[in-house]
Length: 351
Length: 92
Image (cartoon, rainbow over all chains, first blue to last red; front, side, top):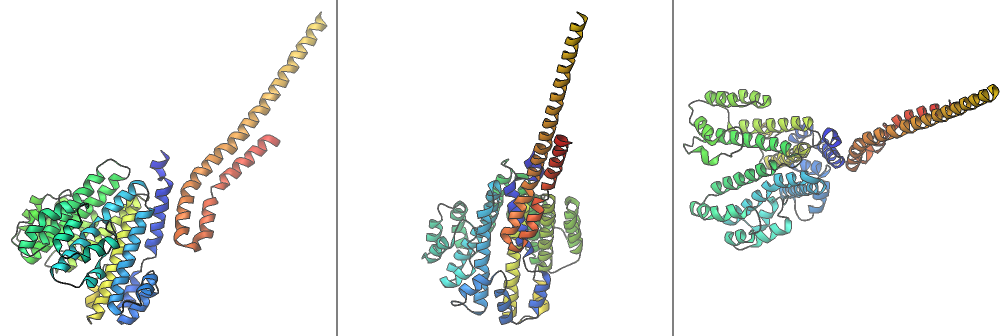
């Protein structure tokens, strides 16, 4: 009874730790300051924040944008691994499952990099060993001669089944897009299985998974419409959320954006999502839709973390916010290096 | 005869009074024990959650130690109330 009303001590301990960490993330004003800085100034500023240790460690081997990219990746991986270590009980299982997307990201990055003949050290710079494949395992994969050998080396991993069945088609078509879709669909299927297993906190994790699936499906729908693909959307849709693949396909075939938004609003109950969808009426560029939906997802996750203060939600909010902090800093540094105007860079930041 | 019966009645009454006084003292002791014991359990339950959160906060930010300690010991006041009630019961 006590556990139900106030949460057990380890849950409270971890939730509080991650709340403090979340409070230490860069505030929006800091991004505003960085937008007015040059690249060396941004590097110096990042070196004075939570990334100091990584910037100092890598300062001798890298410089400029490479230093930023590598330091950010290392810090992100370190943070994520640390969260897995401190998470108790079923929260550890949920956190590990959530971080499985980084295994998919890493393996796809290596396969794509190898296919395009990118130098191994360049591939390593962008890998984020935050999940079951650690830095050594990824280094071994990068050192493999061919993609087939890389896939063979992943025999003990959960993604192997999808990789082995989808890789021949990906190789024949020269595109990993379908294989990527299948990997993520398999990952969400596993999320749903874990959430519905009946372990403590599973219902809260299920709420996050359904929200993530809905947002991902809506993003896919808008992207398909933006690109004007006549392709069947059903194969790209993740099952388990509010919308079925058939519903999304119907929406994809609708004439105007307003019709699609009306159809989405008729099925959605989350208020923040309703208001952001209203903002998308008329033709908007896809990146605005993408960033708007991402911000709404984080807001909704924040709301869930306040409703369930000692659950998986505070952990997931921190992990998501940390991820977007790293992506923002990377976008800022890359934008500055490419001499993009601050206004353009600002549009791509999730603040 | 009558005086013997009266003496016996007085003795019984005296014994009853002693027994009543002893049971009153016993009830006071039980009350005092409950006052301290139950407030101790209540404080413990309160401190469990606060302490876990406090340790989590201090693990991330050492500067929070003073404030965290203060929040952790706040439920101790309930035990002090219990102790005051117990002392009043025993010595008033």
